[in-house]
Length: 265
Image (cartoon, rainbow, N blue to C red; front, side, top):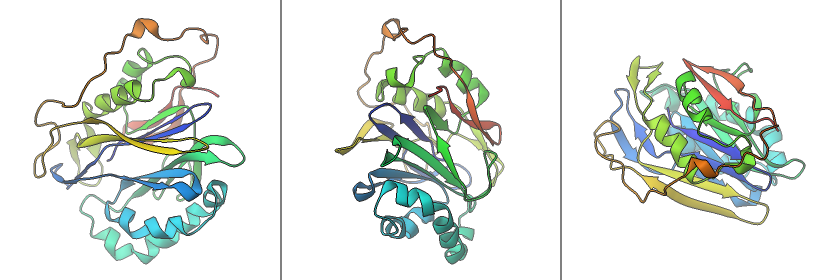
């Protein structure tokens, strides 16, 4: 599935997604943005699962509320009702009809925050339930990826570099094949480019922070990575907050993967 990651810091919420849409055997169908920005709701939304759902529900989501908190209070039943209305469209998706959205933005009551909603009842919650997401969380991942990343990241979420570390994690996701439950094929599906949306109280900024030379009709990873790389020295990472407990928060399993935050607020 799509890589959708989120980073919550003191003054901003960051949402990441790759850009490759693929078919059941992992071949890329097209490359485009998977994130919708809703400035009037102070948020951005990334979509995973059935590709058709994003285009079907974007206007419905955007017109359903007048604030971030208002959307959070109703998005679960709203998405569930849309899935019923568009059931036939979803069932024609050859990679399965599961839906997942990851929302990041500025809450009127909580400040920078994020949550996800999943149609299949993953991560220990009921289908369509709103599940808060904290720290630096990424989907998909594996225990091996988490172990690698844990030694390369700062010990506090506020010390994470949204660009350098965000790109590093998604490169790791790209290198890590996962079993697609619907097709039964193990594949790497992170491709196209990395889109980063930064949401603060006074603006929303969208950037493409990295690109890969993937081609439509090919499977992900045919070629070298492109885009300007920024060197990153791990020696300079902050250790001032080492006293804070680093906690792995498992939102549960996606096959062998789990949504994981390395930080405890």
